[in-house]
Image (cartoon, rainbow, N blue to C red; front, side, top):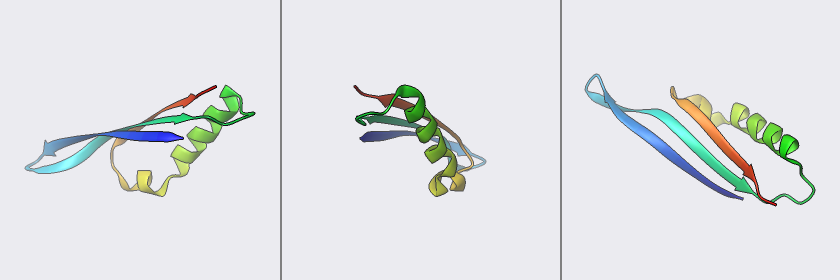
Length: 66
C-alpha cells in the first residue's frame, strides 16, 4: 500500500487551520475486487480516530492496483 495526504492550511480569523485533507491510497491486494476494496477503504476512513479530530473536509481516493 502507498498512501499520501494533501493538506489545505488556511488563515481564518487571524490563525491557521487545516480546512481540508485529501487522502490518496493505492493498494495491491490479491483476491480483492474493486467493490470490496472501496467498501473497506470507506469504512477505514469513517472510523479513523485522527480524521475525527479535524474540523475539515476529508476526501479519499482509493485505487486497487491489479
